[in-house]
Image 1: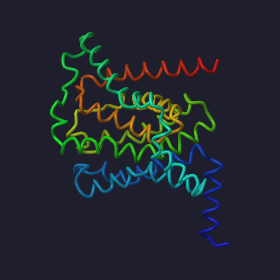
Image 2: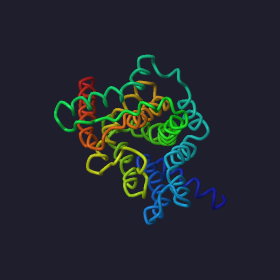
Image 3: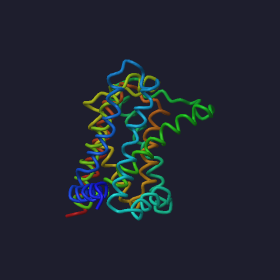
Length: 275
């Protein structure tokens, strides 16, 4: 047996023996390896070569998901990921409404509460001209949905499946969300990453919000027959709605309350079903 064949078998055996560790090690390790030069640079993340390092590192959820799927399940598991990415028939009709409208309803409700409680007198600055500007609309759609497509294949399509083979939806969501939050943490220090957006995150509220959002994503995933397409669109609508409504920076710490409340109610509902 050749050395390369032996190493391949050894790697596969290790991954099969440590299914909960393999994905985060590959996912985070690959990303951080290429993002370190960006973090150490004074140039914008959108300038070359920082953009190249950012994009290569940002491919880690896709590479980890497809790579580990191929390693552990071969062609059949990779094809299963692809089917769940494009098969819209998995998604029940009523869940299309949830996927498309949930974030709009939540954001508007939180904006109304912020006004009522006096948190801010201008919670939203809706971009009413967006739908009349094809170039800007296309850019925002690409930004909102392309990155989630890269993330959801591996993070939910592969890793969430793996977690739910060992834990219930709540624990799986908390672990999945924590790993996702750790991956996002360096974004705060990428020079210029949020320069042209209304989003100005801080770790103390953004990382918990990501974990809460993951619990909601788990619900969509499980209720749509493990549809990667469903969680991709749900994730993309979260991004798109926030930028379209142009949520005030003052609102974001308060938005954690809405996300946390929705996540807590969901967990209580899951636990009620199990009793």
